[in-house]
Length: 489
Ligand code: ATP
Ligand code: MG
Picture 1 (cartoon, protein in one colour):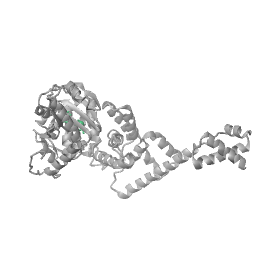
Picture 2 (tube, protein in one colour):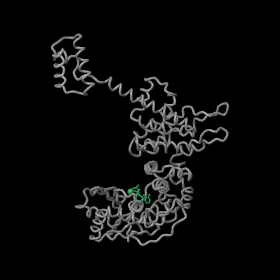
Picture 3 (cartoon, protein in one colour):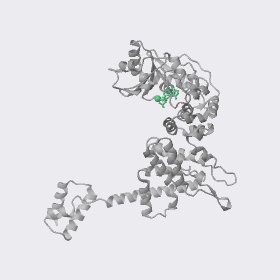
Picture 4 (spheres, protein in one colour):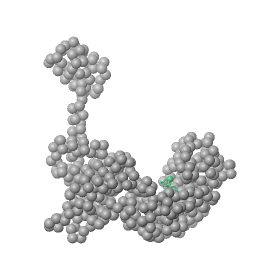
């Protein structure tokens, strides 16, 4: 048996995983990776070192979501690890010598091997300082959550779980190995990681962890923008971003990393009953995700982030007008500016910034379409302005309809269908308009030995017809076809 644990079932909902089920899943997953972990285990122990599969892959084995990225922890120093890998791995590289991590590839497996750590953090530093440790227990105690603080020693495959990770995993709960306040003080990024793993794994966050996140939210400001951004991206790309984003907002973390999001929540107004823009934005995000499979075949960050940000211009542009109505004039343009600024601060690439802010800026354009009143040239301009973001603009515009009035929703969807159909027809026509015969007028005159006149026009038209019927021809084929036509006249 892999591990000898019997578990009392918890009272949490969703229902806990059955232990036997998790164990069986893990066994199956570990068999799949057995060739790699067994060989590494033997190589390292033969050299007098310890090595264990650790963190994400151990957790994911129990959850049945193990990928081909395998993380290991070892007593070996990086130089020794490199030596032990040479001759076995297809390639090795330095992931971060400062962090004691060596990367390697072996067949389909991507491997990262890190020397035992006992990190000492400077509370005001933006990066953790790393010191090597000498035991696996010390290493696991430094990890972020109990479900990430488990290891499987190799080659014997013994589970090391000093912090009750298996129990938390079956209860689908994120807890820190020690006091959450100490853990977050060591590395405030872990607060964002809690929200990210909640979104990725569908886990709940233990109440004392939520409390520490709430009390310490401000500490996230000492973490570098790049590290914050990377966690935010993983959160947004997770299967359930609403869960993670809600945590960020409710704990006050969002106030520091993405203040535009909680600002949307202030939009609820009892007197003027317009929609709660915060809730609307989360729903638009989910409705954009619903279209991803068909449109992109995979999760798409730009489309997701644009959906989340599309209305961030609303708080700043809100005006109350006579009769109790509310307007948000130019919230598209203002929102695009705010989005750009936030993404810059989070050190996104220029391409990402351009793409998301363009979508925010264009998200209202379709509403001028009415019930199909645009001229062809207005349709062409829509396509041209969207440029390479056109598919995402389709996704965003369709997602941006959260009315509970089903008939209204159906009508909007049908209207957008008709716009997409017109775009398809127009672009087909325009591609056709750009088609030229395979020989031009001068070549026709030269081949037939004639001068400009009606016959050149007729020959040109004939070649154009052939081109449209049969697609492109080579120069020789076109010449032969031209001569055949000339003779048959
Ligand atoms: P994924 O690779 O899917 O993002 P993961 O669990 O492997 O998930 P990583 O960010 O790759 O997460 O980190 C690998 C492991 O290192 C984690 O499982 C955790 O044990 C540990 N870890 C990573 N970052 C931290 C941190 N900031 N503080 C403490 N432990 C961390
Ligand atoms: Mg990982």
